[in-house]
Length: 207
Image (cartoon, rainbow, N blue to C red; front, side, top):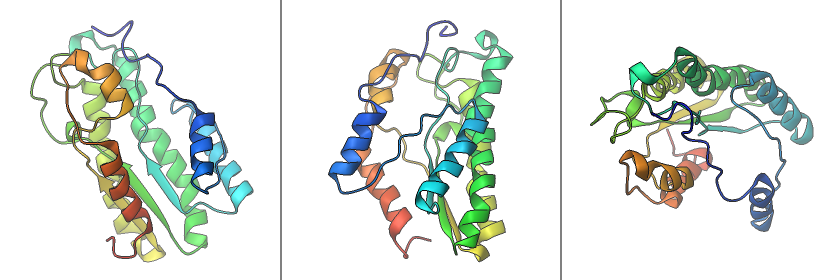
């Protein structure tokens, strides 16, 4: 069980080092710490970016809940842990989108990209902790999986482009650092997925 100790190890780097890397590439960066379990903070971050930069062109939703119990079997998973998954992986992103959409529509369009997972539509190959995933992760990814298609149906006419990206097993820092202990290994390089998302965000040919 991970209900008391799982998924809390710190990743290398910091918001500051990431901002510095963006600036090195010629971009601008605004550091806004946020917690997916605190939707009001995320909505405030949207307002801050809009105030500072005049608008938002892209929302990339690649964050997820990671914490105690996120890779436990059902009987070891408290209901409040599943609720945290739903809040972080579905409800908070929806709050952000509801705040973003009027501005995106008003400026003539914008792009919303959700990064998904096979856990959102497929059965796990094994028990959680033995190469499979926990219920909270799978259920919340399944719910988030439906959002981009509905956005497309409702707002494509307003210039809103929405995509669902399923990168498959990816060797992110979190994955490499934490998930081997739970039977997960390998994965595609992160830069490959980043290039695909960059193309979706910037190319007029992406549809």
